[in-house]
Length: 86
Image 1 (cartoon, one colour):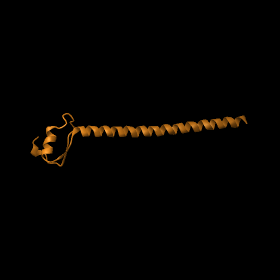
Image 2: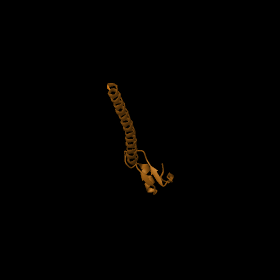
Image 3: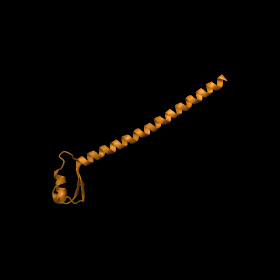
Image 4: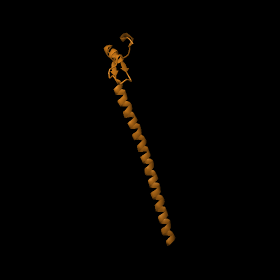
């Protein structure tokens, strides 16, 4: 790709090794703001961690709901036994 073929204000590259590719260097020389591959790599990892955390929290809420239901059922069984003894 020739430097004169780059006609953009922002350019990103998915390659993270080497950190600065010829493509990014050419875009930077043309005055474009560049986003290197390592930034894309890190941001995708952060997004994955946020998604996993959100899923874990949702599962935790479900577990807490199940726990409350089990406790309520135990209390009802205990109350029924106590009522039967009377």
